[in-house]
Image (cartoon, rainbow, N blue to C red):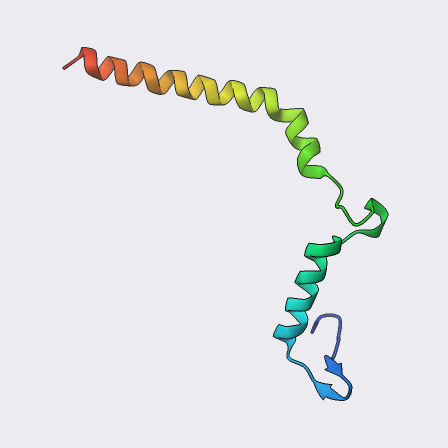
Length: 78
């Protein structure tokens, strides 16, 4: 609000910046933010996930395999 030089007031009464921020966040939660995307967001997280999910899963399974092997080695050495 300060950067945009917005001065909060309602019916000539001063309204706190906190209250305005709360109302803005509620409106964003209900309606979204970007009109050109139909107020639903750009979908960037879904886009990135769809393009990277196979690599991420392979990395997770590889790490799990290394952890299991490490634990088996500990058991074998005791």
